[in-house]
Length: 116
Length: 113
Image (cartoon, rainbow over all chains, first blue to last red; front, side):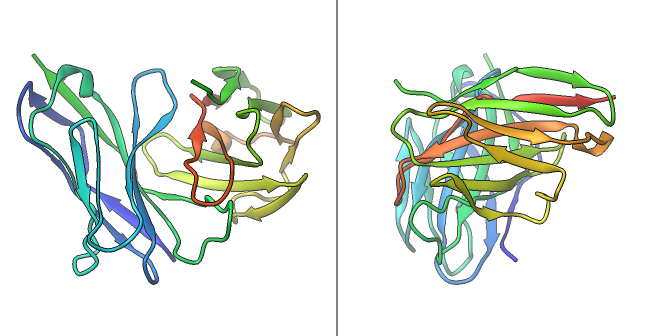
């Protein structure tokens, strides 16, 4: 079945450091790929997405590129801020999903703490 | 900005008791979902609901679980007889359909003692 593997946390960085959170997936065909973020006390929010190979999703300074050849969707940010402290989840939606089907497969989540 | 709301934020229940987790999806959305995350593990899909019936469910969603849209606004998850291993964070989500983004609630932490 489909699966998502992301790097174990927690990750602690100083403000303005470069961030990479690795994510690899196993799935048939070309799934859609997502990064969700959960800030303390809040729900899961979509951070960015990519729906086909070589697409780059970006939002709030975060980027991730859909790499079919390495089945990866690593999350990057050039300069993190304290406000980026949160848990980040990589997820996929199967390629064969029908309209309205949002059966996402998630990774375990990576907790990021950014210190001033 | 529209949001999905879940109540309660935390519920403690005794093993064997029934619990109902409540969700108010975004008002014009048509598809509704429940996910759960056991502490330290992955967020797992439980069930999706459309047009007043279950459209997909996972192996986790056995006969102990049921979902209902009792009125035009609420979407509930019922666990008939809770077990210790049902302790988890339960997330509700909704989407308007197609490739539209799924909006998640803040979660209900269920603790079974």
